[in-house]
Image (cartoon, rainbow, N blue to C red; front, side, top):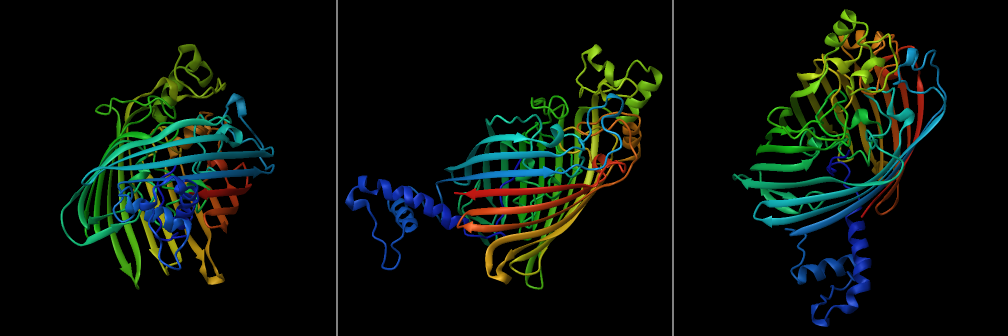
Amino acid sequence: MLPSPDRRLLTVAGAPARLLVVGVVARIVLASVPANAQAVPPAGHEDAAFDVMNLLSHEGLHDIHDESWNAYGQFTLITSYKPPFHAPHTNFNGSVNSLVPDAETSFTGTFTLFFGLRLWQGGEAYFVPEVIGERPLSQLHGIGGAIQNFELQKQGTETPQLYRSRTYLRQTIGLGGERVEKASDPMQLATVVDARRLVLTAGNFTILDVFDRNSVTWDPRQTFLNMAFMTYASWDFPSDARGYSWGGTAELYWDDWALRVGRITPPQDPNSLPVDFEIWEHYGDQVEVEHDHVLLGQPGAVRLLGYRNRVVTGRFDDAIAAFQADPGKNAAACTTYNFYNYGSGNSTAPDLCYVRRPNVKVGVGINLEQHFTDDVGVFFRAMYSDGLTEVDAYNPADRSVSLGAVAKGSAWRRPFDVTGLGFGMSWISDVHARYLAMGGVDGFVGDGYLHQAPEGVVDAFYSVNLLTALWLTADYELLWNPGFNADRGPVNLLGGRVHAEF
């Protein structure tokens, strides 16, 4: 589940590399182009990138300053290794959501193509197919807000699957002010827009394409591997099991200010792939206010985000009350009633399967970023959600904090290398903890017992730029109290990533 990259900090040599790839292909086909169509590069610029871009511009096919279309791609392979760790109880009394304490390996592999097309003045269309194969740790069970690999999807398989991650339209309406250049990038056609403008988006996308855009951590394929740093760990934004939704957003930009609102679709059942398209009945509403500033000559931003979901979920207090009134309504008996459930065999525990109905969940968060130099930026996120209902689509955390720093390697003459250090914590509400302590399961957490504690993670990485648009990353993560359980862990996680752009 990936948003589009923001290059404010990570302005690396990806674009020249993409031109070079296209240029090499162009060298092969130039012989078939009529001689009078081949633009001649000026002296000293006889390279493949210039050949192809000049040719396309000359033919009116492609203008890198006001694109009519573009195409990009990426490949990312991430591996993780978890050595054995301390855990006195695992899947206690037939519960099923523990992180297994044995040694395990995990991986994800993604290949993505990004296509953009200008339809009319201010109108753009985007289509993004993707292939993913994955193996999670412990079937993705036992970690709350700090899953070690942001690419992992619920209900994924080791067999690579092709799917459409995004198909959407965007309309930009100029309202005046200064002119702002938009560089060509995945899901962004190169153009010039008004600083005061209205941007409308509708279709199939992830809400992270529009909201919570932090330029320090925005592209996880270039920065942290842990999901705690991709967005707020406790923001339960509606989406299908892959992280994508249908819906619409509106963004009003007014110089240094921005206001965003949006409504998107939830899954039919919590953490499932089928989407509930009754968006007038069940939905996720988001609103965000942003102010950009300059501090000591460097850019920064402050964002406030609030969300309100009206989705079919279960309340923890309702599940506890139902079990106490009738112990026959336990987790193991959910299948008897043919209710949607997570397969727990714990006959001594409550379960949310008996009490799912339309419920409201709300939360509010703050997102800060500040650049100290062109190469160094810091970030901070914090969110408070009400913690009354189960996780519907993201992580089961009810409150979360994350902070850290990301830097390029210019200071040691490696300007395209990237390194970072992040710290994250997440908590659950009292009623959520009581439900888990009784043996209940919530999405992908629930050990059958609970010694409540906040879940924490430290993530440190170094990404080496090997070729123009190829990076190799080493990553270390230390996770404590996995699943909000003080009796489990700490867990060491060793990771690696290969990432290429074209």
